[in-house]
Length: 133
Image (cartoon, one colour):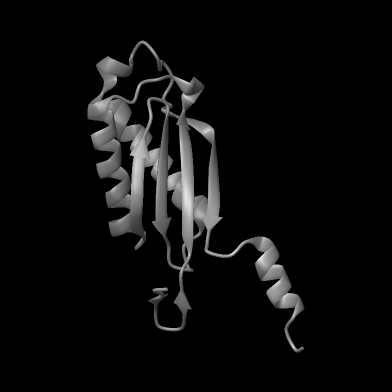
């Protein structure tokens, strides 16, 4: 397994983020999808120092798999991703989105973020329990 490193640590922190459109409106077409991928890629890699592993959309939600350094505060990262992408998408696709969004929102307030890894919680728990034996 490959680990990333910084000045004081080795790490592999992978996350699966899912964000959904406000009211689950099915507004993500091919043009919006391409722009969302570009926005999320730039924010994750250039602004936050994360590594994008995979990204894809459906008509009403977006999935992102990424690796992040340990100093990244996930709630702030997600807030930044949603705020910037919402602002840009609403600005660039205003005519297309007008029938769906009359308030300045694109994403739902909620999101799902999962940590990912090769071991289950039960395996890690057993490993910790077995320490010192």
